[in-house]
Image (cartoon, rainbow, N blue to C red):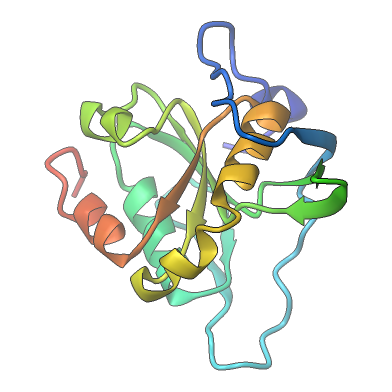
Amino acid sequence: MLFTESDFVPPAGDTFSPVPTEDFVRVIAVRKNHRKIPLSRARHVIGTFSPRPGHPRVDFESLLERSALIALARLPECLSVMSQPFTIDYEYRNRSYRYTPDILVVLKPVPHSLLLGGFRKYTAIEVKPDDRACLWKGRLPQRREAVLRGMQMPLIVLGEKAIAGLKGSKHHGS
């Protein structure tokens, strides 16, 4: 399933209200497919693959991101996964920022276990190794608010343990 502009507008009743933060995040622009995965000159692995038969090829920029894409795509409720789906330019505390989530997943229906974890039909995902997730959390509230305000969807952080849990989930397809 390929995405169109209308795929990024959740239907009425499938949106979120941002959780108020101490500081206001102002979204300036949202651009589809703005960030491309750069050629790797480091130790991490990049590539492209089809997460399941009939699904368009998806880029990844780490083996952990690839594992998350595979685990999500194999959920029977997964309609589609997309890498680097959109970029949000926003202001926070009078400074400009740019943020691109790693993955966009579309689920229908959303499995109860994922619903409890904050997933909705449209969910933006950031993939981080468990030992680096805590370093990233300083900007998590402002990035979550930017995604909520700009795309009306939650932003979830998935680490290695959460990805392993997705793979072993009773909702997981074979």
